[in-house]
Image (cartoon, rainbow, N blue to C red; front, side):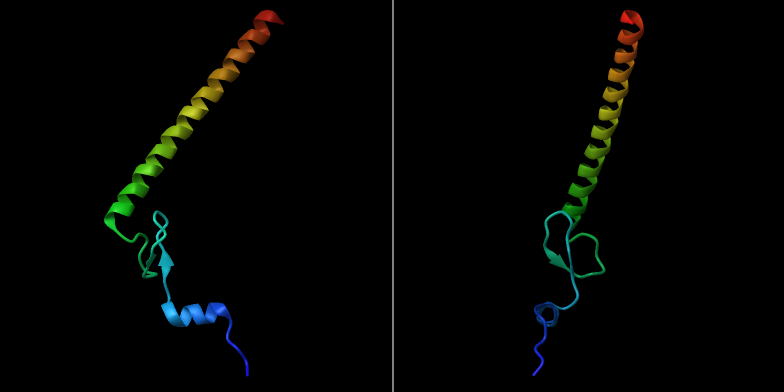
Length: 75
């Protein structure tokens, strides 16, 4: 009389699968993305994130340089 857990029931119903990191649709576990458009969207968003990170670092170092200048001029 042992009942299988809900995870086992889901595995039996759906089989091995993974989910697309962009849209969340179920897909075969051997694929990374469900479609070419999701892959393209992922690549575009990764490029935007890298660009944003670079701008943030440039801004941070620029502000630190300005602070040090003020510190040495005023101090």
